[in-house]
Image 1 (cartoon, rainbow, N blue to C red):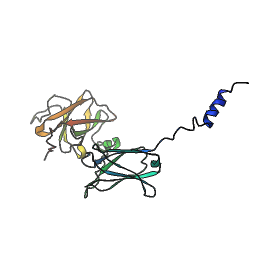
Image 2 (image 1 turned 90 degrees about the vertical axis):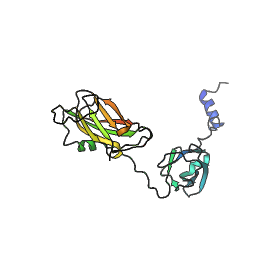
Image 3 (image 1 turned 120 degrees about the vertical axis):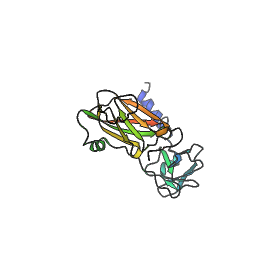
Image 4 (image 1 turned 90 degrees about the horizontal axis):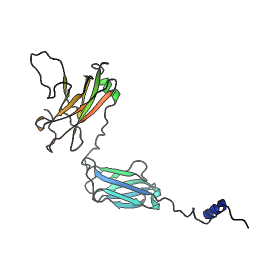
Length: 243
């Protein structure tokens, strides 16, 4: 009697349930609940997982860090997630939810959704600099940022200095080579310098009045939009932009 081939053995394992007995992957849904403006975790939020007919398939409660999660075969039918918490408006998901780390940003009554921050594109910066830019200089799009919160800081002083190491000063009645530009940051903390020489490094400075100044040194390239961030340590006192 000949020995069974390895193919015969493999087929026997499948038909006997050796491979077919593997359990299917279980469905899961996870998420975090935070305040839309504070971005602080919301503990004790009631999370309901709903199917296409609006029936509750599973429930969870967010923990101290705002986190929650569920894993169950029944979750395969989930199409929507609803979050409710005292003092906040109801939140509903948008799009596929299975397996996702859902971020539920809750609004309080009367609050409007925070505006989505969209950085300026390179083409938008070039259009802005079209009058002043030339082929021998560099374009710089910079942003002043609060180091503690990560928020942009409008209304603060910004400098580009490729000369003396100290902050630029105006020499009244003197003739001198221009070695710096100055401006004031705009919405979301953005500032722009459209024609900076590229012969050497440039020090980009952000100044927060009496709170001091911070700077970074960069080497700029021609033909591209150079970008830089300057993070200001406001010492917890909050932003105090120029009047």
